Length: 430
Image (tube, rainbow, N blue to C red; front, top):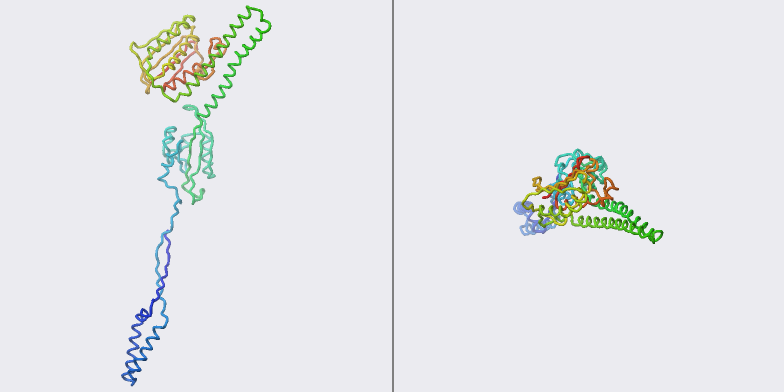
């Protein structure tokens, strides 16, 4: 509301002439009175003029009254610059955040969301209550606690659908400098999400590597040390035992070598996983080369590899060496673990599925696996039968390598299996 201010103006004549000008009516009256005395009272004219001049001088020396003028004006009350939050700037502020961010009103409904939040949480649309869309107890407690206390709250949000993610969620009040938070009817909260997924995955990979790699290498190293001690001791002069033990030692050393090679291969793939390949690969020729390279293993296992491809070349964008490793690994696994079916089928077909144009299927007719094992088959060092895998020279990293190569090529992989019906792996490529 505007203030009413009263201003007093003091006016005082600045000179004797001005004061005389203000006394003109009084002087005229006195001159008339003196004239009457001169004409009718017998007063001498010269004395009348002198008296008049004396009277004028005396009146000029008198102090004049001060005139005060009072005027009332309206002065608008000053508006503090930071009294309210500029609602027009809120969308720009939230959009400038690098992480997903949302502004909630007092009821918890979404007022604004930036592009990152729209991409990560498309269901959190403007006007919807956040705690009704994301039914997480920690989120509800953080929002209610921040509204109640006016203090920021943070917690770690772990979600498993549609994929496993971790986020550091911070709920902070948007405070107005000149208002009490508890008395403000327009209380607003800022909710931000900082991704911790990559940090969690790196930490899990480091833990898995220490636990699994050390375990995988401990057994062959223990065998090597034991056989070396035997050859240096009791079997030092036993030629037959020496030959037998040296063969076992070579097998164990090769196992460690394969494990190290697979670990290095997986590390190189992960290092460049974010860089999409730019080369051109003919899938038809590549699959024929893979089949020819595994003919020795197929004949030894009495397995026939049947390849079905179009007659014309099928070109895709990719890294030829890595794609060769993918299909060599899949066909080799099918030969080793599905040999009971006596046949491995490799099929190349054209599809049209959300940007994916080609599908390579590797099918064996072996014993298959239980459904609970299928989702975990691409985990590092995961084995359904660890002893059988070691006997077949498996490292437990093959399908993990396949998965990461396909992800680098922006493709997809699916595994289907039932006990007694074999196993099918589909690789879909753009």
